[in-house]
Structures are given as structure tokens and as C-alpha cells.
Image (cartoon, rainbow, N blue to C red; front, side, top):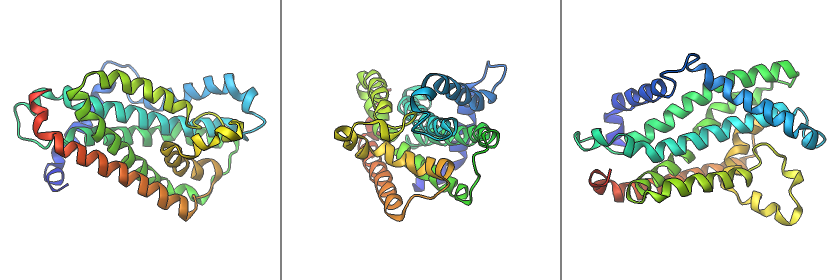
Length: 254
């Protein structure tokens, strides 16, 4: 952490570069950050609103808040996983902490997430969904989500350097994980005998911390928040320990 703080200028340079490169040749640029989740929500609403409409009030807000969280988690985890190989020319030439690259990827994802909250606010206003004081908790929810995602990124990034099959396997696992997480469907449709799968899903735990202030207008209970923070910090600790043990070998494999 001390090394990262000493090189915080480099971290922010990498964040700005990641944001610029993502939409470099795009006409709309960063507008896609706000437009893509909205388009995904419209598709899901057209496909699933009839199926879930009776179970979920204001499905548009429910689905879009879930999509925003999932896009942040998925894109940031994948970007972190690929960040070391993508910056091989820097790692092999300059003595920089390797962790700056996954950290920058997650921070860039957090910036995208905050921009994507703009269309969500628009949908909330258009649909007449109430704006409640619990929304002020969103910055804390984003921090919890970022800590959890960074832990996943720190865990995956050295594995992706040493074993290239991890990249393909992660894509499959993330797709499976999305369907095991109530991103666009309500938990109530899951049969009772399988509901424990959703209940023990750590991503669902973090998702609720992010979505409850938006959709339910409430801050999750103290027990839920403590458990979510413990899970996020545990994943971050495991990821950081794995990354630190592997960092000395990374320049020889990227």
C-alpha cells in the first residue's frame, strides 16, 4: 500500500489512459458508458418483464441497478486479469509495483460505474420510483464493491500470466456466476431447494449492498453490511497475498 501511495500519480495516469483507450475510436466516447447499460436494460425488460413483472415492481430500475453492478464487476475483473500482460513493456523496463495495473483497472471501472449512474437516475425519475435518503450510502457501497473486485483481480492477474488457460476459463466461470446471481431475475423465482446457492453466493451479497439503496430505498442491515465487508476484505486479502507471492516472477512470464 505504501508503494502504491508513493506512485499514485502513475496510478491516475493509468486510469486516465484506460478510460481514453476504451473509447478511443468511438464517436460517442464515454457516452457509451451510460448508453450500453440502458440498452441492455431495455432488452432485458422486453424479454423478461412479462415473466418477472408480477414478482418485481418497477423491473426497469431493478434490472438496470443489477446490470450496472455486474458490468462493473465483470469488466473490472477481466481488465485486471489482463492488465499485467497488457503492460508487459512497462513491467519489463521500469521498477514499478506490479499491483498498480490491476488497481488502475478497478479504479477506471469505478469511474465508469459512477458515470453509468446518470441513466439510472433518469430511469428512476421517468418511472416515478421514489428517491430516498438511502442513496447517500451509494459511495460506500461502491467502495465495498471495488474492494471485492480488486481482490478478484489481484488473484486472477498473476494466474493469467502463468497459465493462459485461466483467461478462457474465467470467461466461462463469470458467465455461470452471472446466472447464479440475481442480476436480472428476482430470488423469489428460484426453487426453495436451490435457493441456498444464491444465498451463499458472495457476489449476491455485494450486489445487495449496491442495489438495496437504489431499488428498495434502504441501507442493508448491520449484519449484512458487516458480512459483506468481511467477505470483501477476505477476498482482497487472499488476492493481495497471492499477488505478492507471485510478483517477483511476473516480469519473466509477461
